[in-house]
Each structure stands twice: as structure tokens, then as C-alpha cells.
Length: 170
Image (cartoon, rainbow, N blue to C red):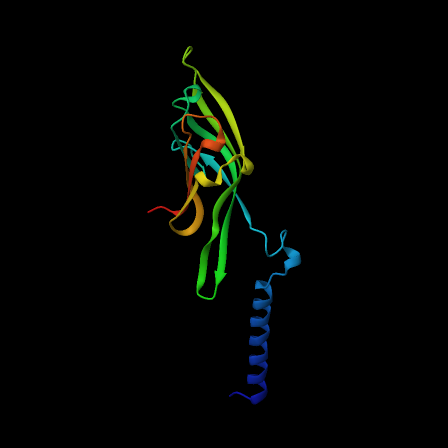
């Protein structure tokens, strides 16, 4: 048999639990590292098709003679994704995806000895020509799935055509 006082107590306890749950989900701007207008930077590990535990696969083609037939063995990338929040959902902003910085670790075959030498290429955002940077959006989740780099037979990063594949490629 229920008494009116017991039912009121149960409703108050239930409300306390829902309030506590909702308060945990609210984040203040002081807890964030960046302001609300900044674009969030993501980090990922890079690798080639033969590299295990690589977050993002890098495919290089059109490489110059000094690194011809190289393979990506590792690296890191910091990238951003411009998202716009609307009433109906999320849109990709006009900036799309951008690379803030990238470190590529390559295995390059020495033509004379046949040995493989490790080489590192560091690329900053200012060294990438935005006219040659393209973003392709695929399915959710929106992580950096792969990077295609057409080096155009040049080591100058301003000439590279880079395609960023964001999202799961089915």
C-alpha cells in the first residue's frame, strides 16, 4: 500500500538523479582550452598500407627521383575540420579540412647499395598551397581516414596536390 508521502519522495529522488546527470553533461567554456570561435585541432598517427596501428593511411605518388618508390612507415599529423552547427544538423564549413602540421617518415631505397634509408619530411600549414588542398567527406565517424599526396615530381610542398579523405570510406 502506497502513501502519498512515499510517492512524493520517489519523484524527488528521480528528479535529483536526472538533474545530476544533466549537470555532468554541461561543460563550461573555462574548461576548454580554446574559445568557442577557435577550430579544434586533431592529431593522428600516419602510416602506409603495410604499417600497423596507423590512424591514417598516406599514399604518395608522382614522387621525384631522389625518393622514387618510397613508402610511408610512420609520422604524425595535426589537422582541423571546419564544422558549422545549424538547427538541422552539422555542415562542413568553407574551410573544410586543413593540415596544421605533418611529419612523414619515409623508407627510401638507395639505388647504389639497395639499402633502405629513413627520411623525414616536415610540412607546416604555411608551406601548403590551399588551392591544391582538397577535402572529400565520406561516412561517419568523421576521422581523417587517408591522405593522398601527388608530389608533382617536386620536393617543394607548395606544388603538392593533397587530398584529405575525412570519414569512413566504404
